[in-house]
Amino acid sequence: MIKWIPGSEDLFIAIFKNGAVVVMDKERDDQTFVIPECDSPFNAFRPHKSTKYNPVSFWKVSKLGLTDIAFSPDNMHLAITGVDGQLRIIDYRNERLNDIYASYFGKLTCVDWSPDGRYILTGGEDDLVTLWSFHERKMVARCEGHKSWVTGVAFDRWRCDEQTYRFGSVGEDCNLILWDFSFSALQKPKHPRGIVVSPPPVQWPAAQTQPTNIERKKSLKNHRLFRGFSSTDTTTVNNNVGTGSFGRFRKRSSKSNNIFGSSDHDFPEEQQEHLHLPVLHPPMKKNQAAILQPTTVSTIHADPCISLLFRESTLVTTDRRGRIRTWGRP
Image: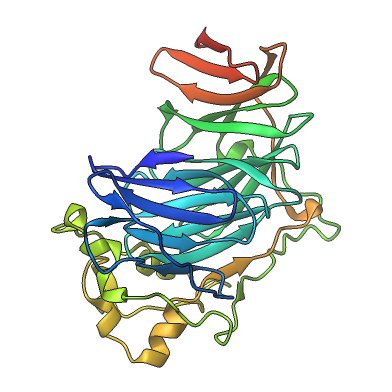
């Protein structure tokens, strides 16, 4: 899969079946390079010292294939799904892996970001659409309705506000399902004691995740596309939300509020290693997860569906035979 990096006419990003992500510049020439071996969960490096050659940057994200990517609305983060059943959240301008979420089971096939950047959708081989909270770093709900693998998910930006979020999904069961998410619409999990216990995040051992990035000072944030931008660091905001199980991970100084500042040089080397470690979030048990029921279920194709796109007045779907259909809004 290939996507343009938002705001750029030159840079684009590609994901591959070998678990690699490559950032390319269409104005540069291609040149071969050697991939260094690394056992860390995320490895980013610059293959060429010269600015004449591609790739601009190379990321080793997974040992298995990657399936889909989505940029956050503020263009600060990248969500990537993979065959290993993991959702990865990457600060792509600083080339850092922040969080890893695991599916209930099976691979994840598709991902989308809500228009306000608060929620992330995924679908996969567990026949579920899963809703994740980006700021709270946890799973919000599992959406049950498909009878086969989910192949496409999308938020309806024209039907999302602060109280209710409309999104849709398609799958190999040939169904199009629409969902309306609000906290009042969630069904409480059937926990035996009536208490929802979220599995605690797991921090990677420092010995296994020591940053191995090459030429860190030349990360993507220094590319001409990103010069002059500034934004509040979402990880700092997250740490101010509460003092729950997420509060003790990667606490930052107020000096790191500018995501494009030189925060890498504001901390001792030992503290930098701690700040940059990704957090692994284990899957929630079935009887602990809140459930969201579908609003509309409709069989729309004779063949398995592939993708879904919301437009202002229509919906667009595709199927495995390459047919594209445009639908009026319900």
